[in-house]
Image 1 (cartoon, rainbow, N blue to C red):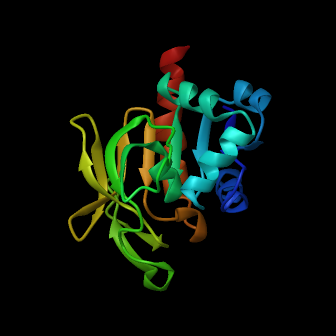
Image 2 (cartoon, rainbow, N blue to C red; image 1 turned 30 degrees about the vertical axis):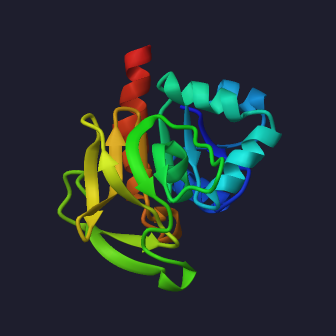
Length: 198
């Protein structure tokens, strides 16, 4: 399985390290030719508007949007969640997303940079162990579509969701050294989806 990490802006290296720890050799994605060869994609945290704008500058925005709409497995953390949402509250004027996830997100829902925090939260992957979640200018999910599963919440706000081939978290698991979310993406989201295609 060839897993790409969108390498336009944000915490790319941390996601690459997490994927390597899970036994995957990730590909840094900036060009159309790199999108053509990947089976799955990770959208890192960073600045959602900047990432979308750079995708347009690099000429890969529509290609990414199409691949996601066609069912390519994709995981987005923080800004990646915003980029996967079909609808954004408090969006900047003209802000674009790749879409693919039937959710409404609120940008910077937990507050500004000074309001960043860490918390141990339950994650619905069959384990009773809590997961360390790092929230940095994080969004939360205001509404979910009928086919979206809520995997984790904070104060009754969903912060991890999944819909078939799309996984998103409003927190940054790549910053903790705990690779459980990345392993869940590979084993429970991407691999089953790719096996169905074969």
